Image (cartoon, rainbow, N blue to C red; front, side):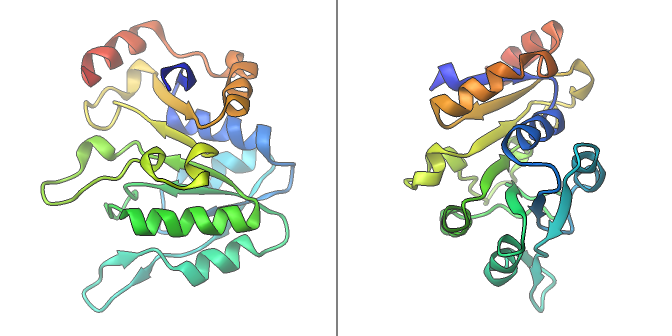
Length: 197
């Protein structure tokens, strides 16, 4: 729904603001290391802590999501949200619909807020198929917050714009309430329109 798509200054700020709005201080935020390093300190500025659900590696060195590690992380006291990189940063893994549904099932079962960082979607290599989280036929697809940006694919991060997509009217209201922290740069908005069209 285009009415639930909001320009934001960047994906990291959007993630942090939604985490602050949806989780109490001291909450645990689940991530899948190796992961984008700023997750480790940025959420700490908001009084949250990181809970690791490490990716596994097979004999070829390829990374994968570990359902048991995610389950264990979401089961920890105070675990309140899960930030999923899809495609994953820095491994480049492009998750399948089945893997995304597994994450959705676990977050739904544990009542965790799900935030999906899709910032690297425009850079998926030939042979890989990116599955937008919001395209899933899963209840959590309508409750998650999805974030994306043209900053990686078109190398324009300095223009200060990203996109936050709310799955529900309640999520959209949350983004609107935090508009002062989520104002995108005008030039960035114009550049993103050009990039995505």
